[in-house]
Length: 297
Ligand SMILES: [Zn+2]
Image (cartoon, rainbow, N blue to C red; front, side, top):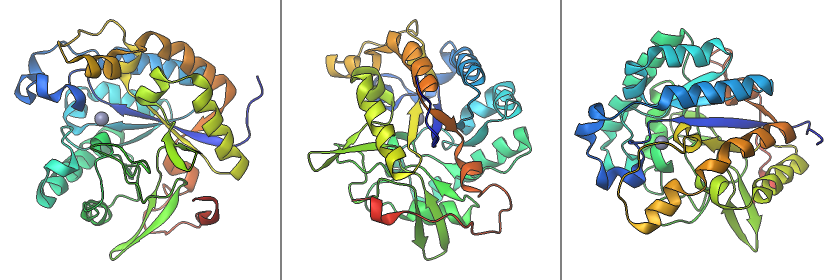
């Protein structure tokens, strides 16, 4: 298989199998401490396949988890990957007040920076929950020292999606400064943006869709952003009794993710987000990277 020249972004939302928002109605947050932890094992497996492919990635880690699994976070950084923030305890931005959101992203940044000794520059909201009307979250990210966001999913879906968003990485001009936005990859087809970036779509839809999407990014000379969760490569995780639709979306296709990941890493080159855009180097600099706005619909 030929490998592309464009390096795409490989990203991992690091959370336990019992912290998934689709399961939240069935798993009380207060009971998290009582479940068997399985995240480290899956993260190790992901680190291993990235190493074999000589690829780098960005790991968006929950502060709650970093505090409990410091060695896991250090291992990511030691292996040359970027450690970024997924917020403290997996609450949607839509369930938080601005003050609660600020506290969550501030605490998480501090814990991760203490562990890795490197600045945390990126944020991804649980369930891509920076939706229309919650743009104040972007301003708080800037104020708290973040340099990029990866939460605006330019799709129209019940409960999430930022339909007005651009498909390619771009600058967001906010009253307090500029933030790089790195949306998860979509495929433009039949006049709509299809999610083609990973997660359930990677498990349940044909592999060819993800490949098509990334090739399309390459034609424009722009990196596409792929995402995966540690629990998605763990078919043996304890299952919660959930309704049929949730069962399919959450537990469907778990067994095919590892082989698909291996294939993806053979066919495409991947790197982490912040170093790719040169925004890691010194936090005062704006960066000289510019969006290719013309390529976005
Ligand atoms: Zn998440």
